[in-house]
Image 1 (cartoon, rainbow, N blue to C red):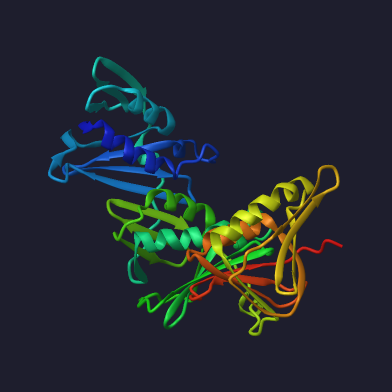
Image 2 (image 1 turned 90 degrees about the vertical axis):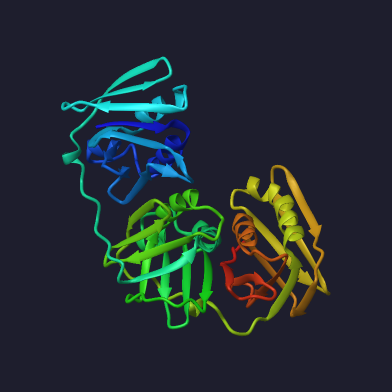
Length: 377
């Protein structure tokens, strides 16, 4: 293999491929990036056996030459070290020349590196995912969906299905649900035609987090293809493959009561700032607990730390309906939920002192956040 490639563009593609490579892998060869030069393009592949990223670099991008291929070939090079070398080189273009023993000569500016490579035939084949069951969403919508749900997945492997986001395909909408059993994030995508033949798919939160770092907040199409145990995201010149989590996702529909006892409407950013201030003492208390008291048309937030002191703050409200209430909740969960609701005015509906409460836009039900209260007595 002998190629010449534009260095800055190459670095961007390498950084994206690196997101699929983990230092903890059972196969040593997966610590490397596979480079395969054909007659027309260069294919970069990275994988940790759970997430795989394949990027195809053409010879021209926006009518500018970024890649020249003198002779095709392939090699696997140490991912971290190879990328670090490319980043630290000078010059606009980098030359790579690999011999039959996979020793790769790297030249740019006045620098010359020789890196030992590995046989690309030892690199595992990527999973096959057909396009018979697929949907298309814009990258901006997909990015928003991930931001509004992925934070609520469970970090614990005790219940593996809860470490992912459940995509549920209904006739006229798609529901995206994440929960760690203490809070829940629900996002709906309505009027979305799809040809998906499965009822649901649980995509690991880790995979969605890495995908979110790659896709842009633009209107570019992302094609999402599902097979029995894999999902493939096609985005520009990238193929992003992740395994799906196995198991039955819990039925969360019963967590949403129909009739609230108390409804509070607040300005999102003002309320978030108030929670943030009061949480200063809540964090010192160890459980992030804030108490909210709704009484006589007023709302008060309070928290105390035996060693430091206490704090009370009256909250500006836009509207209040229903009964008086006193409830405690995790301040971090509340702030995460408020950040995930995109509108400036939010409605918080309470169904009792020890029942889950919901946070959503006051004029849209596409995003609903649910939090379990904390018993503080």
